[in-house]
Length: 566
Image (tube, rainbow, N blue to C red; front, side, top):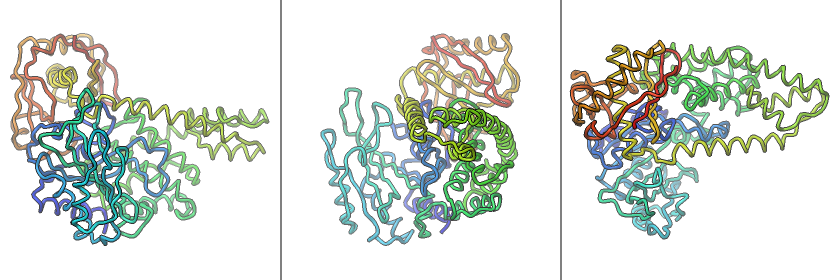
């Protein structure tokens, strides 16, 4: 069974159980300032998991595109991936543990045909905040599953996303000892004073990775042997004149990272030295470094990207954004690769400078080369060995570990306010982005489209399509327009309607590429109308005074403004 068949079976099964299919959200979160990318199926659904009614009902199913950046250094083994697809089914205050577990069991055994004897599960062991999950255990036993382990919070508990909010125990399913599916039971709300209170309407959130499940279905213990990856791997073999089986790691890194780059660029990310753009640049550069190790010394990323886009077993036709943005994807990859190859050449010169000293290279010196020029440690060692010199590898690894820890700390900082901080100030800033969007279009023209936003408790950041620097006069006009709407005390209203109706009523809907059939539309007086998931205030009068504090480029054909309320 290939990935396309698995995804179709999953959707068909849950639709037959009363679920409605929703489209994958963009990889770049629309209303979540705390994370760079959607990293789980539940991220786009946070407002609904927190209690907002979903326009399509209480039972949902989807295939969500995800990126996880914490594992970049791990890619190269048989199962880590930066980009992946997550199958998920959702109950928003409808069914709970019994139905969720039975659905999972039925899909794994009846639909996919896995032998129940291969199945083992884990459930929450209980602690001072919540009891042992005997209920899940009994449901599994009623289905004939006896290989059940009780594990603590770190293994079998999800959330809350921030310091407070919905959370609960989960049950994980394993085939031959490897995890394939996770059912999360959000039945508690963690309060600000650390109490765990039962939610009046608990939710179910599940996640099953496409890549791992396809590998299992085809009897592989290496994800990269499946049809998701083989067309890409074969193309790398052609370019390198080497075989995957001889040294799989570089093949895996190149395949994974170029696939990730393709999907990131398709969703509007462009290389930069900050945030999402930095992650994109990093995966492109890591793939080029690995290609150099395979002896690929000419531009190749575009060729691998084509193999990703053309993959008939998985992506072709499912994600129109890949074909729609194909030229842009190729152009960005080509430019980045050309630039980075020049950087690598400069790195080679720096190594040669170290070699001329005729003594061994310290780990710190090697790590600086690795950081500044993207020079892989294997290449540094190769150059040194040619000159009978050695490298302090232990010190290099120490420097690298410290850097990874620092990066993880910075990443963790992105999550400290939760996956969707619905505090009053965040809600105010989010509503203000609607006023700003409408004002930009009125002053600069209808070509302006939102291409991203990031909100913290201190400020809002808004990216939009426009190819010229804004003049002082334009910035003043935009600021005045926003403040005029605030002083008009406009009421913010929400309507649920078919997406085609929202389009007919000229509601703005630019973020991402796909929308569900039924959407929420937020209208601010007679000034702004947008398809959105929230959160919003009820009246503009509470926003205070709006001020733009900075305007800058956000990449080719894009501008960025930072603004505050005071």
